[in-house]
Amino acid sequence: MTLKKNIATSEEGFVFNPGTGDSFSTNTIGGDIIALLKDNKSLKEISEIICKKYDVDKDQFEKDLDDFESQLKDYAIID
Amino acid sequence: MEKIRYERPIIQKMNTGLMNKFGTRTEYEPVTNIESISVKSLINDYGTPLFVLSEKQIRRNYQNANRIFKTRYPKVQFAWSYKTNYMNAVCSIFHQEGSWAEVVSGFEYEKALQNGVPGNKIIFNGPDKTDDQLVKAAKNNSLIHIDHFDELYSLIRLSEENSLKPRVAIRVNMDTGIYPKWDRFGFNFENGQAWNAITRIINSENLDLVGLHCHIGTFMLSPSAYAIASTKLCELTWSIKEKYNKIIQYIDLGGGFPSANTLKGAYLPGSDTVPSIDQFADAITDVILGYGFKQEDLPLLILESGRVLIDDAGYLLGSVLATKRLSDGRRATILNFGVNTLFTAFWYDHKISPAQAFGSHTEEMVMYGPLCMNIDIVRESITFPLLEKGDNVVVHKVGAYNMTQWMQFITLRPNIVLIDNENNTHIIRKAETLDNLQTNEQLPEHLKKQTLK
Ligand SMILES: Cc1ncc(COP(=O)(O)O)c(C=O)c1O
Image (cartoon, rainbow over all chains, first blue to last red; front, top):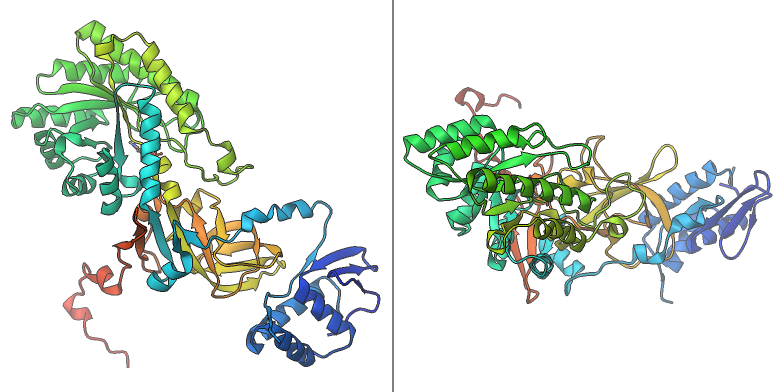
C-alpha cells in the first residue's frame, strides 16, 4: 500500500488529491496512518507503531486497518 | 507511557455542504444514566437487548396530562389503553394514578380484571368481542363500546336472553378533515349510520346508552381535528337530549395524541413539531364548554391516551455486534436488536444515543438489526460516532407499542426492567427462554424418533 505521489496532507488530518480536486478529513489515528504511509512504512510496521501508541489489540487494529485501506483505495489516495 | 484511547481510523470526503450534516455535538452526547441508574450497570445486571422503563416518568406524564385537562374542564377521566403497553406493572402504575382500563380483546379484559380494575371501570372497545365476553362485561357493568350492527344486535339478543341491561356507547367515525379517514371502526356520523344505531339502542329495552366514543386516529398532529370530533359528538349528545330527553353521561375522545418521536420521512424531529397536550386540551374543552350544555348536564370527558403517556418513559439498550462497509462504501452497523424487538422502527426514526464517551468524529451509517431479513433496519441513515463491536447504544422513546407488538421472531424477547421512584430496579418481565416458547408445542408421536446420525 503506497500513497500516491502527489497527495498533500496536513497535520490536522486534511488530505487533498490535486489529481481529482477532492479533499478529505480524517480522525487523528487516520492522519497518523497516512503520515506513516508517507514515510513508506509497511503495514506490519504501521500496526506495531499504532498498537504501541493507542489502546488497541493487534487483531482489532488489523481488521480496522484493512477497512481503512479499502476506503483509501476507493478514494484513489493509494495505489 | 499511557496509551491513547483508540478509535477506528476513518477518512471522509468533504463535499460542499457536508459540514452541516455533522449536526451539533449534543446529538451524540452519550447517555450514561437512566434516571440515576448507570446504563453500564443495567447492562451488566440484565444484559442486552434490554427494555428499561422509568416509573417516575410514567407518573409525571400521567399527572401532567391529567392536570392539563382538569384545569380546563370539571369532569375528566383517563382510561389506560392496554394495547399500548399491557405489562401488568405498567397498567398498575396507571391504575394507582386513577386511570381506568381501556381494552380491545377478551384477553386484555381479563388482564384488567386481574390487575384489580373494577368491572365498571373497564371500557371494552374494538370489533372483536365474543358472546361470552359480552355477557361477562355486561354482568360486570363494564362500558361496552359497540363497533358494528352485528355486535349491536348480538348484544340486544344476549341481554334479553340473560335479563341484562348493559351500559353501552357507540363508537362513531367521522370526517375530521384528516387523511386517511378512519372509517372502518364504529358507525359513520355523516351518512346517518351513527344516528340509526343510537335510535336502535334507545328503542331497545335492554341497552342503556350512556356514552359516545370516537378515536379518530393515532399520532395525530392536528388539534383542530379534535375540535371537529368534539363538535360532532356534542351535536349527537345534544340531539339525543332534544329528541329522547336522555342525557349522555360521557364523551370519550379516544387516544391519538402524538409522542415526541419523529415519524419516518419527517423533515424535522418530532420534538420540534408535535403539538403539546395543552393545544389538544384547548381544542377539545373549548368546544364542549362552549356548546351550551347546562352545567349539570356537562358530559364526563374520557381520554384513552396511550403513546403520549408512556413513549418517553421507555428506553431500549442494545449492543453492537459488528460493523462493516457496504459495497457502495457506506458504513453499516449491526445491532443485537431489530424490528422484531423494536417494532416501532417501522414507523419512527428513533433517536439513538451512544452509551459511552466518543471522540469528535462521526460518520453516516445504516443501522441494521440482527435478523437474517432484508427488512430488518433500525435506522436507514444516521450520523453517529464511530462504533465498535461491543459498544452500547440507547434508543429513546420506545415505551409505547413495542412491549406489546414485539415479535418472537428469530430471537427471544428480552428482559424488561422498571426503575421505580426510589431508583430501585425490578424485572417486570423476564427474558424468554426456549422452554417458555415451546410449552405449547406438541410433537406427534411418530415424529419423535430421529434417524439422523
Ligand atoms: C380505541 C383506541 N383508544 C386508544 C388508543 C390509544 O391510542 P394512542 O396510543 O394513539 O393514544 C387506541 C390505539 O390505536 C385505540 O384504538
